[in-house]
Length: 279
Image (tube, rainbow, N blue to C red; front, top):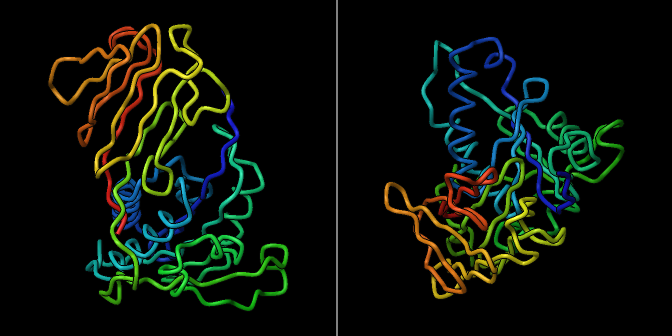
């Protein structure tokens, strides 16, 4: 199933020395994946040695990039090599399961413009950032062939500086994945819908799914799932028993699995969810 969504695509590319050392490459990949998940993102695949990560918003990508640069800077050498990374990210339409659309291509070209220890984005994406994060962006002069002459910005790492952006407060996010799909509920998007309709935030193909099967809302610091379906919504929390909801609400915990219209053991499209905090 291909679903068109607006998302932010980030590429993290190891430095030349890091690429040549297997231990440092693995350490970088693990660190990128860990930070991506902790800020609501998802590592999709590797393209030409570059790690591709998808986020629901530019703010989440910028926060992740800031943390990655700070963590890389603080790490001791691995296998005798100091780990280095350069990062590029861009927001735009992304087709689920595709790696060749314009947003992905531009993000790839942006990471190629970044130097080691540098994060680069398009000025178009920088304009979407929260003003607190935008204060850390600086316009760059593009090289002659840089990203088809699209204006660029460098994003400095506030985590490296050990400061919190003025006016920014930590943002709770609930990250949901189903196959290649990613959806995030947070104060930026306070309600998401799961179901068969193409305009749902997570599109479920199974026949047991209703058109607008269930919704998740961020309210009072909690993420609350509400079932709207005829077949019910099933939630498994860690090792606990599965909870069946029929037009009922449930406050979601930090991690678990949602099954649409049928118990998890029969579901071909389980939805895993995690709580994360963007700082």
